[in-house]
Image (cartoon, rainbow, N blue to C red):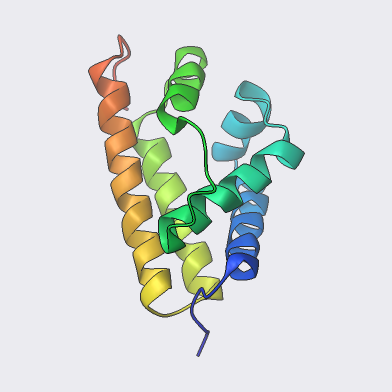
Length: 131
Protein backbone atom coordinates (compact mmCIF):
# COMPACT_ATOMS: atom_id res chain seq x y z
CA UNK A 1 0.00 0.00 0.00
CA UNK A 2 1.24 3.48 -0.86
CA UNK A 3 2.17 5.89 1.90
CA UNK A 4 0.46 9.19 2.59
CA UNK A 5 1.62 12.67 1.57
CA UNK A 6 3.76 13.68 4.55
CA UNK A 7 6.04 16.57 3.60
CA UNK A 8 7.30 18.96 0.93
CA UNK A 9 9.24 16.21 -0.85
CA UNK A 10 6.03 14.22 -1.27
CA UNK A 11 4.22 17.32 -2.54
CA UNK A 12 7.07 17.87 -5.04
CA UNK A 13 6.71 14.28 -6.25
CA UNK A 14 2.96 14.75 -6.68
CA UNK A 15 3.22 18.11 -8.44
CA UNK A 16 6.04 17.09 -10.78
CA UNK A 17 4.38 13.81 -11.71
CA UNK A 18 1.03 15.50 -12.26
CA UNK A 19 2.41 18.25 -14.48
CA UNK A 20 4.52 15.77 -16.45
CA UNK A 21 1.23 14.03 -17.21
CA UNK A 22 -0.50 17.33 -17.97
CA UNK A 23 2.13 18.15 -20.60
CA UNK A 24 1.47 14.81 -22.32
CA UNK A 25 -2.32 15.12 -22.22
CA UNK A 26 -3.79 15.89 -25.66
CA UNK A 27 -6.11 18.72 -24.56
CA UNK A 28 -4.65 19.91 -21.27
CA UNK A 29 -1.10 19.91 -22.59
CA UNK A 30 -2.17 22.23 -25.38
CA UNK A 31 -3.72 24.68 -22.88
CA UNK A 32 -0.64 24.73 -20.66
CA UNK A 33 2.02 24.69 -23.37
CA UNK A 34 0.52 26.55 -26.33
CA UNK A 35 -2.12 28.84 -24.82
CA UNK A 36 -0.71 29.73 -21.40
CA UNK A 37 2.89 29.07 -22.52
CA UNK A 38 3.87 28.01 -19.02
CA UNK A 39 7.45 28.51 -17.92
CA UNK A 40 7.73 25.20 -16.07
CA UNK A 41 10.83 26.25 -14.13
CA UNK A 42 8.76 29.01 -12.51
CA UNK A 43 5.39 27.26 -12.42
CA UNK A 44 6.37 24.04 -10.68
CA UNK A 45 7.82 25.65 -7.52
CA UNK A 46 4.69 27.84 -7.28
CA UNK A 47 2.48 24.79 -7.52
CA UNK A 48 4.53 22.97 -4.89
CA UNK A 49 4.05 25.97 -2.60
CA UNK A 50 0.33 26.04 -3.45
CA UNK A 51 -0.29 22.37 -2.65
CA UNK A 52 2.00 22.38 0.37
CA UNK A 53 -0.05 25.30 1.69
CA UNK A 54 -3.34 23.52 0.89
CA UNK A 55 -2.26 20.35 2.68
CA UNK A 56 -0.12 21.66 5.51
CA UNK A 57 -0.99 25.35 5.91
CA UNK A 58 2.54 26.59 5.32
CA UNK A 59 1.56 30.03 4.02
CA UNK A 60 4.27 29.77 1.35
CA UNK A 61 1.96 30.31 -1.64
CA UNK A 62 1.42 33.87 -2.77
CA UNK A 63 -0.68 34.41 -5.84
CA UNK A 64 -4.11 34.75 -7.39
CA UNK A 65 -5.00 31.56 -9.26
CA UNK A 66 -8.35 32.92 -10.42
CA UNK A 67 -6.74 35.91 -12.15
CA UNK A 68 -4.28 33.61 -13.92
CA UNK A 69 -7.06 31.32 -15.10
CA UNK A 70 -9.19 34.27 -16.24
CA UNK A 71 -6.33 35.41 -18.44
CA UNK A 72 -6.02 31.98 -20.05
CA UNK A 73 -9.81 31.73 -20.33
CA UNK A 74 -9.86 34.92 -22.41
CA UNK A 75 -7.52 33.27 -24.91
CA UNK A 76 -9.11 29.81 -24.88
CA UNK A 77 -12.40 28.99 -23.11
CA UNK A 78 -11.85 26.73 -20.11
CA UNK A 79 -14.98 24.59 -20.04
CA UNK A 80 -16.39 21.94 -17.72
CA UNK A 81 -14.86 19.10 -19.75
CA UNK A 82 -11.36 20.52 -19.34
CA UNK A 83 -11.82 20.89 -15.60
CA UNK A 84 -13.17 17.33 -15.37
CA UNK A 85 -10.15 16.02 -17.28
CA UNK A 86 -7.81 18.04 -15.04
CA UNK A 87 -9.49 16.63 -11.94
CA UNK A 88 -9.47 13.05 -13.21
CA UNK A 89 -5.77 13.31 -14.02
CA UNK A 90 -4.99 14.87 -10.64
CA UNK A 91 -7.00 12.21 -8.80
CA UNK A 92 -5.33 9.39 -10.73
CA UNK A 93 -1.89 10.87 -10.01
CA UNK A 94 -2.62 11.08 -6.29
CA UNK A 95 -4.00 7.52 -6.28
CA UNK A 96 -0.99 6.20 -8.21
CA UNK A 97 1.45 7.70 -5.71
CA UNK A 98 -0.21 8.03 -2.31
CA UNK A 99 -2.86 6.75 0.05
CA UNK A 100 -4.09 8.20 3.31
CA UNK A 101 -5.74 11.22 4.92
CA UNK A 102 -3.58 13.86 3.21
CA UNK A 103 -4.01 12.15 -0.17
CA UNK A 104 -7.77 12.14 0.33
CA UNK A 105 -7.68 15.80 1.41
CA UNK A 106 -5.66 16.69 -1.72
CA UNK A 107 -8.29 15.08 -3.96
CA UNK A 108 -11.16 16.72 -2.10
CA UNK A 109 -9.53 20.14 -2.25
CA UNK A 110 -8.74 19.69 -5.95
CA UNK A 111 -12.40 18.91 -6.64
CA UNK A 112 -13.53 21.98 -4.69
CA UNK A 113 -10.98 24.20 -6.41
CA UNK A 114 -11.97 22.96 -9.88
CA UNK A 115 -15.66 23.51 -9.14
CA UNK A 116 -15.06 27.01 -7.72
CA UNK A 117 -12.77 28.00 -10.57
CA UNK A 118 -15.24 26.85 -13.24
CA UNK A 119 -18.10 28.62 -11.50
CA UNK A 120 -16.16 31.89 -11.25
CA UNK A 121 -15.09 31.72 -14.88
CA UNK A 122 -18.65 31.02 -16.01
CA UNK A 123 -19.98 33.97 -14.01
CA UNK A 124 -17.74 36.39 -15.87
CA UNK A 125 -17.64 34.88 -19.33
CA UNK A 126 -19.33 35.48 -22.67
CA UNK A 127 -18.37 31.93 -23.75
CA UNK A 128 -20.79 29.04 -24.01
CA UNK A 129 -19.95 25.92 -22.02
CA UNK A 130 -21.92 23.39 -23.99
CA UNK A 131 -19.95 20.82 -25.88
